[in-house]
Image (cartoon, rainbow, N blue to C red; front, side, top):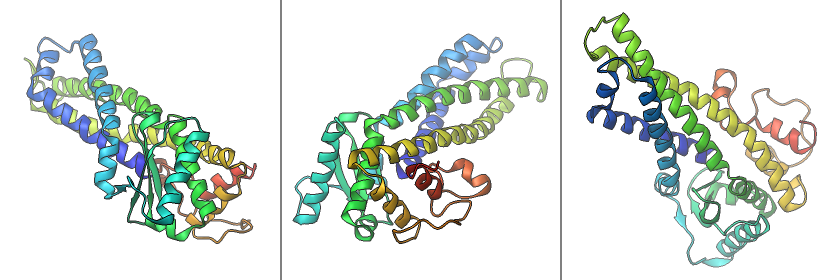
Length: 290
């Protein structure tokens, strides 16, 4: 989940910053001084929308390391670090991608992979995950993250985010222009109503865009689970890891589990903003019941 949250948070920050820069440079004023130039606005939206998404992707490794306090293992110390690095590299070789950097950070059981390129990614694991799971289960989680890298999930989500950013930029300014003319009745150029409406619209449209990104993220989690099972030759280690993440001991899956999932995704409206599907759905998919 961390990789998606970090990407989206960074992207929103970059997009907001680009919007401020555009206003300061007078781009919005140029687009609206003689009416709204829709073709120019579309090109502006494409450049700023995809620009923000790809800037976020390019700095994703640095942001991830900074925000989690993770340290990259450059010279493994002890058998545990050596095993961790060797396992990541072995799985990367099996997935036919470049060997990623391996990092460890303090925190609850979790892991993530990030980076702009398949052959120079970062795989980070929390101390909580390493201490609470067996090596076989940790290997399954690492296989899951390696699959994200080999499938190019970060790039795919960045492209989706770029398209959505384009619509957010474009529609927020169209709405701002309409509101400024019809509600605030600005006759020449645009007034404060335009800029206020643009800011509010970007926030609202940005929330809906995040929901769409999260939907695609949930779909790709199933693929990453399946990829881990393929790399390890069996789905059982990934099932065991998911059960531990859900607060259960490995074993037979109970017939009745909470509908919203256990440590997988929130229920109700919150599920629309979850980057991961409910754990019981992921387990069911691995068991061929999804």
